[in-house]
Each structure stands twice: as structure tokens, then as C-alpha cells.
Length: 111
Length: 117
Image (cartoon, rainbow over all chains, first blue to last red):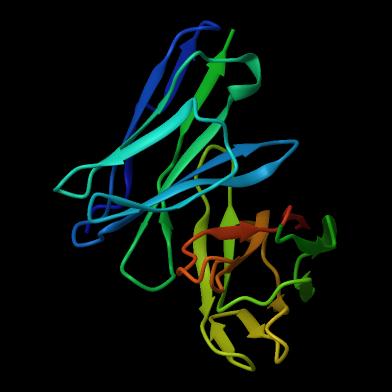
């Protein structure tokens, strides 16, 4: 069974630009979460979606947004990129209870 | 906010040795998860614990959900070179201050494990 697929794997953007990252969950998984991973802060929760509704949101500025489509695929968007947004962005999907499966991530570099 | 204290930060051991790492929190969790991450990849789920006091094994790995719901440990027996990686604990829940369900995972900072063949 296919795992969680994130595209693209690598991305280089310039400060001030915006970026959209994509995540396809495991078939049948309706919950999709996004995390930011940096060496300094570790893994930080961004938001979680279930059936196209955002159920939880982390402590990130409004420049970080997301959405989920009816097929459970999810996208996250970061507007007005800053150097500090450089990170590995991870998507995870799960059935209703725990056991989140992560994708390989999108490595975003802001220059 | 919720914080997880994971220790040790790093371990350098000989092949065949047993390893133990743990996480403690000031908050209670409904679920404890243990992940392993290798370079260039996302975290891979090793063990999920859903009940206080639960002890679960997965091959050479054993993990326990603490009775107080504020801690968990992971043991690896007879380590092998492919055990190298960063191990993370993560807690999920409980309820939000608003009373809603909490689907967020709070992660520890990780334990870097190096195994010398």
C-alpha cells in the first residue's frame, strides 16, 4: 500500500515569495497533519485536517495556511517567505486514532 | 505549553549492547508514540501506546506508557548497526483548554543513537 507522498522533495525560494507544498495521504486515511522540522526547534506542529476541516492549529503566524480536499489530499501554503522558514516540512496521515505515518518531507530553502 | 523532555540527547554504544531512552512531560497524554528518523527521511513509527501502564514490544524494541501518563521509555535490546538514527518520543492529547479533542503530536528533541560495529 502506498505511503504518504509529499511533493516536491526539494524547493529553493527567495525571500518574499510564496510556496505551496502538497501531501497525498495513505488511501483511507482522512486525518492529515503538517509539521515543521528545524535543527533548533525540532518538530513543531502546524495544523491538522480531517474531512476538509481544520481541527487543530499550532502556534505559527498567519503566513502559514493549509487546506484539505475532498479526496483527503492536503496542501500547505507559506506566504511572504522569510529566511527562518527554511526547514523540512513533514506531512503525516492517520486513521482516527494515533499512529501517524509520515512522508519523506519537503526540504524548503529560502535564500 | 506542553513540553517533552527526552533523554539522553545522544548515545554511542557498541553493537550488541542494550539501549534505554525516556521521555517525561509536565502534562498528561492520551497516547505515546516512538519514532525513528534516518537522514533524508521522515520519522517512521516504531511503537504506539494507548493506555497508561501499557507495555508493548516490536521485535527487539520495548516501550511502556507510564502510569502517571506523563512519561514513557523505549528499550532496544542487542543493538545492531542499522539501529543508528534519531529516536523521537511524541505525545498526543489530551483535551484542549476549550474542551475540544487534541490531535497534535508534541515531540521530544530526539536521541541520536550511534552503534559501533
